Length: 223
Image 1 (cartoon, rainbow, N blue to C red):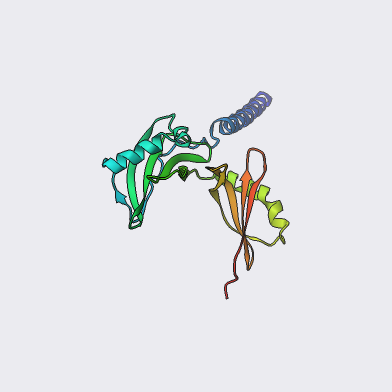
Image 2 (cartoon, helix red, strand yellow):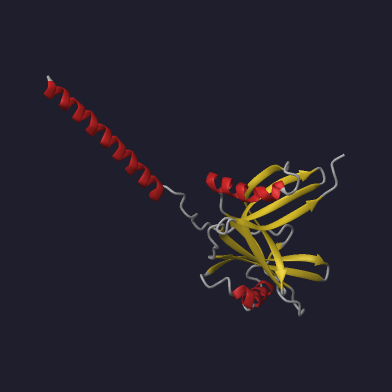
């Protein structure tokens, strides 16, 4: 009887040890294998030029394409190959046209930018520099990344009254012109309403754990 009780206790103890080991192994696998993977590169967005005429393959379209491809700022985006989406003629005035050369690149800037399209305006008979415009395919945030973005942005929210309401948490970007060249900056961001006449967008650098940029957007209150 005593030996039977000892056997039963050993069996229960062994079962508990196996359960604990299985739970620990499962947690290890989850922590090391089930974390959100880096987003895969996505096809870039085909640009839209409302009201423009498709002149791809015409003499004017070919000339515009050659001018765009010869531009140094454009060249730096084409190292990983590219695809011509099209050349479009926008008639700005009766005697003045802008030719939009639209290029689907193979470039990404992970983790936030997973597809990049160039939309390059070309003007004939002018010395104006080409300005590269970007249309981006952006990645999505996981729930944990959204929570981290909110935590980092919270100090900015608190410093402006503390009662700002959060409108959206997502990945977004802004563009600026530095030295005559357009550039984009993509980060997770929090859009918020600070007051009746003030909104804000707080961009967050998750790698550095700090705010990257804040845009204040004043507007007239709704009557």
